[in-house]
Amino acid sequence: MPTTAAPIPSDKPKTARVKTPAASKVDKSAAARRAFLERLYELDKPGTLDDAFDWVIARTDDLLCANEFAECDRIFADVDAERISASVASALLMSTFMARPRLPKRQVFIQAVRSKLVAERGETEASELIESLS
Image 1: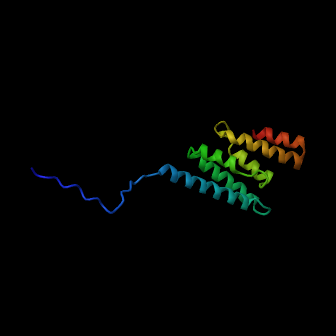
Image 2: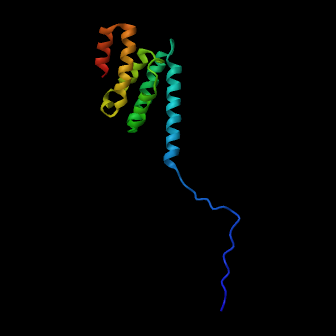
Image 3: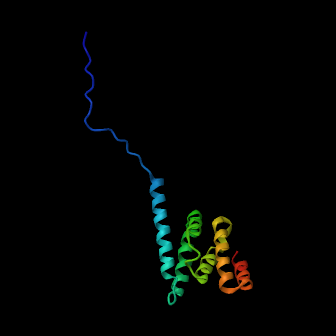
């Protein structure tokens, strides 16, 4: 009766190739958000506010036109309302006005901006501005 030889084990460990496009996309998304915020903070200073407005409007328009509502919403979650001027915050809110139903974190950002505006400009002016952007 013939005998069957056992297979010879390989010295190389078997590794499965696992593609993780979702993880890669998340990493790229977080990096893009960090870059967005760094640029936003960098531009938000006297002498570059016009550039800041143009840049904010263009970048948010790019996101919204690409149906990247979740990414835009995460920006609202990550932006530090204390680090940006009321003017740049207003540009961010104006540029996302039409998409507001799809940006739930935008409302939280509005409240943070409102608090800042009340301290800087008083209750009446803050209320009027926030009402126009909400």
